[in-house]
Image 1 (cartoon, one colour):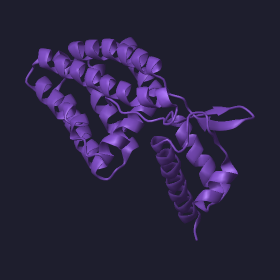
Image 2: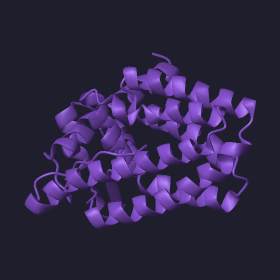
Image 3: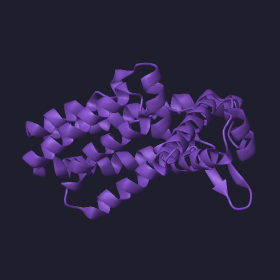
Length: 236
């Protein structure tokens, strides 16, 4: 087997380990604070430790786990307070960004947004959650960047990183439950911007983030009360 083939096999194994661990986090089998022991996970998955290490790195990157020096990784805790703070900040910044950016979007920007939307839908159909979220962010980034304010864009990017775990969990649940409502605002936003309707584009953004926060609060409040699950939904 060639080196490239070895890498492909390892990456597939890492993806499988990631999906398995993430699924256990979503279901509540792995509770908040649970240690992610590399050798135990490797034994459970029937693989070597290398794919497990890579899977854990991806879990940390997506905000599903936290890494502690000399102690390894553990499942991250999610709180309603954190959710409210992040989504309140997102609402303020993203509504302003779309208000400023919608009127400045070019024809090329519209084409970029449509292409990202199509790729997002393909990723959803193929259950490629992270790819779907990446494409959604590319779509939104295009209109937000058109606002001409790089500080607002930088702050939004930071918040996206902070709430990536909510996005991953919510998108996964939406795909599993075939909840199309989470993927409907994007084409509506594009259409509103193309028609020059900044008021509608702003309203779509406001309603989408508000609905996401409501869904997330409902999901997080149950596990917090019973301390039995760590599971959430999202606005993308």
